[in-house]
Image (cartoon, rainbow, N blue to C red; front, side, top):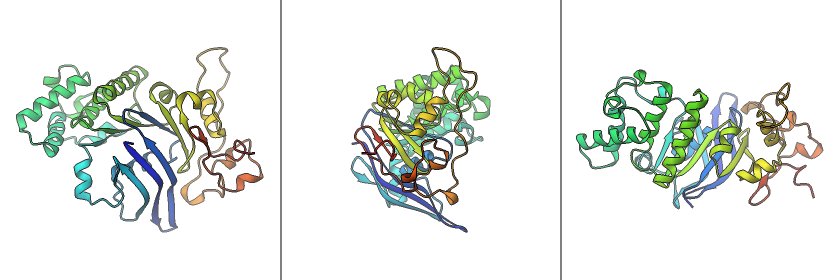
Length: 318
């Protein structure tokens, strides 16, 4: 197994006490697999994967559980050792390329810097590799684009540059944190095609974080639905879309405009809002928004089932 996460808990010490952002998350990612992680903003998607990347550096953060990459435990790994893995074997595509890129350096310099940090290679060879990578992600005139600054590129081109940087050392695990956010539909489709192509060519495993079920349907092999720092449903893409079991998963799918049939006058919306970390309800966190809530929901439901797992007492009732 490429990545194996077991009982991951991420908490933050605050003036209001210790708040748990991630609560007992466990999942696996196999070689060559694309795992889609979906949920509303604040569901814990990004924090979970930042913990995997070793990028939660807040001194008030407490990370517990096990994160194994190719059998090697990452929790508690010294920063020097984690830096050797990050960028070379595990890479991340960040949500906002404008903040992920340094504005005072050209994109070619930034890509070449990462290559030289992990490989014994000269500046000229690293620059040529950067040009080749920009060509691979379909940036026009890569020999000229390599000397451009981030502000001189469009949003879609900046995102391609960030993808090129993430792939510069041929990582075996790629984490994509909502890379299509704020892009128009045409560019979004191109980015998804690019991620699929690069995943095939480099044989990388991909964890694709998004709040868009349509994107998940397009790119993922397996899906993990998160809500309030917990996994509420997981399984193969086909099983989850054809037989969604958790009320939250069904609500997310109901919010997608149908491609066939009559056009609804109004899309269904999920009432209410996700709970804050300091005000998480007892039992099922989705309970206050769930139309199927009953007495048993006052207890936290376990995630039950294999390979299609659901954390819902009504679904798993005998």
